Amino acid sequence: MVTLIDMRGGRGHPSRRHPEKAHRPDNPMPPKPAWIRVRAPGSDAFLATRAIVREHGLATVCEEAGCPNIGECWQQRHATMMIMGEICTRACAFCNVATGVPRPLNADEPAKVADAVEALGLRHVVITSVDRDDLADGGAAHFADVIGAVRARAPATSIEVLIPDFLRKDGALEKVVAARPDVLNHNLETVPGLYVRIRPGARYFHSLRLLQRAKELDATIFTKSGLMLGLGETRDEVLQVMDDLRSADVDFLTLGQYLAPSPKHAEVKRYVPPDEFDDLRRIALAKGFHVVASSPLTRSSYHADEDFQRLKAVRLAAAGTPPR
Image 1: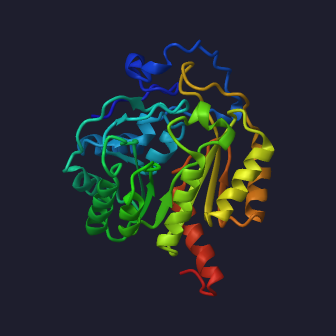
Image 2 (image 1 turned 60 degrees about the horizontal axis):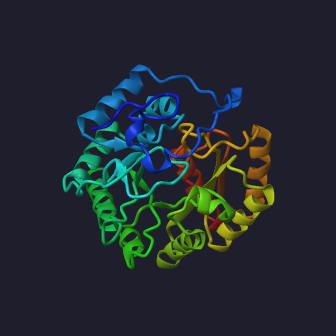
């Protein structure tokens, strides 16, 4: 069952959200500047998308993570599927997804996701998940099953997966890559110096190596990663992460403003103005990324369909083949 979001950033039930963070002093949440305010959702197309999600009993990261772009994306019938349940085994300081003991995997979920993709008429679908450190392969085989089900039901739909790091799960990444998603995304989320505070269950260089390894396994796959800004990182640290990602041959970079889901989460240190995002986009393109999405409201799956078309066009142009 999917729970309605609280448009302030959370989805309610604070007592079951990150109980280990309850000891932290409340951080006052500064007012959001005008450039990151969005309209509350409610159009007919939004309601139709929500009805399809409900009908198929699916979770979406749009709701679970309190994405500010849900109104715009769902109006266009673009919903990012979140598989393997609504309970994560980790407790990252930035994330609004509930932490706890997950339920067993639902064997019917791959078919339900495929049905929803067909019902929504998606040209491009983004599939992500919670962290499932309780599973021997981190849920990699389940990812592969979902990819296979979508391929069978909607063969014209391109598939982008936003995967966890599969930390210490040998062979997990290989299972996902073997299923041949069109885009493999894994977000670094922040600069390495902030991992202990922001992403304590992960390791920066493991995540970087995962992205590099994906290209080694399949050179045709597009790889993608993203950073949240405003957590206390410096400009030089962001530029170094760009260089690290290019060294791992990552094609696509996303940069967006971090928004604290609640006062219990990591605080917003700074609201980065749009012109600074524009400047970082120009630098990232100069460093060799094929596509860069950089704006306060950019998220991993925001405009993912259009960006995938741009990625394909860049590759075709590099090969001397005009895009169709």
